[in-house]
Length: 293
Length: 250
Image (cartoon, rainbow over all chains, first blue to last red):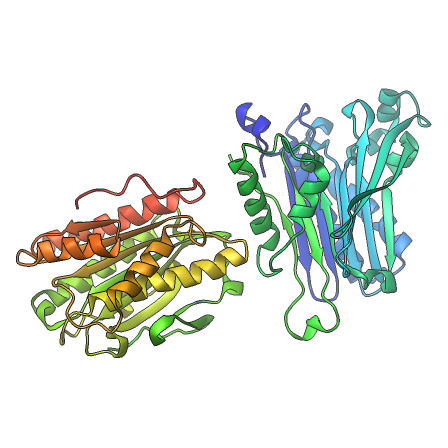
């Protein structure tokens, strides 16, 4: 969804989201292009396509260890981005975009974030856990910095050990509302390595959905980011383009109150079927983004 | 009257008074917002002189909609009405995407019987309200536009004017459909134009349009009017209200 600021400035939507599912595994990815760099709408798309391609290669190669999965997806994603840069003669500035993804298999699930944004997990008991990541000076990490081993990025924040990435975790339960859970800081080095969450098979089965958002969800005029996340995860069904419908519906209601997204928003969700539901319909997962000018 | 086949992915729904309609299964829909279009055509005995022109009008209207830039967001239902049918209506096809409609499969009306105008309007609007409610419940955005084409006044319905008024009133609350435009079109109605204007007002329809005599030219203009109106209503989706660009005349 294109943000109001991009509309007024004549900029394209620089967020993108993709997903895939084949019944045995599912993957979602989002990317947020740097607004002040080059053709990062293109870069964001290359990152999402490259990450999905990496996930599919991992599926083909039957990579099962969750830690190895994270390393392999990152390596293959970087290789795909480098190949694409060569083919399309893109400068580094065109590929400066964040990346967040989730990849679920029979062995469990990996969630990784490189940059900023929000990770949210909705559990079968209705509880939602959501974590927001922000970089100081609005200078997030981009995977494209790997071409100089992240040195320029570290210099921008001072050095590798500077605590530049903040993490703020909240939970939501219908009966209690929002509860602040924790706040922490990560060093430049840790942030550049990526924030990861690993779910074993048994932990994964407690989840109803896994959602990843670009930081645009934290910039909706007049709406607290936590309320926005909860509203966007209140799916009425998980058939078809369910994420897009929910986002359209939520933003439509917000616009009636004069509120609108200031920045582009991309959102992708894996909806996890329980074993009982599996016989009734297919699981849904969807990456949703739109360039709506 | 043969119905267009291809019931794949369609589901039957019930309205009050044992009326039914069919519509594409929601889980098979690809877009996130739709304009529901209903075209109801008089099949009473008095249309026998221009049944082929009515067919041509239908094919031209739906065919033009297929070329709309919003064609992926339009679902069309077509029905014929005459008291020779149970409940006064025969659904040619239920709400389905334009891409799935074969214009060559439409057949000319087989005129006979009297004019169940209340049945036609009730079926048209009631079906859009019901399907719109289901779409809205799953976060789809939808609005509606209906065209009821007739050459005579009401004289044979099982649905009452009260039932018709109820569905039309419900259709404009904005609770299920974002907006609804309902158009009663009179063809060859020099003698009953006033009756149809009164019917339209009493039922609560958006407007009554006089299409004039049932000539090739006038029915071609009617097809163009239908297509333009559908396009305008579709483009108004998301604005919170109905299209302001529906022409007052054909």
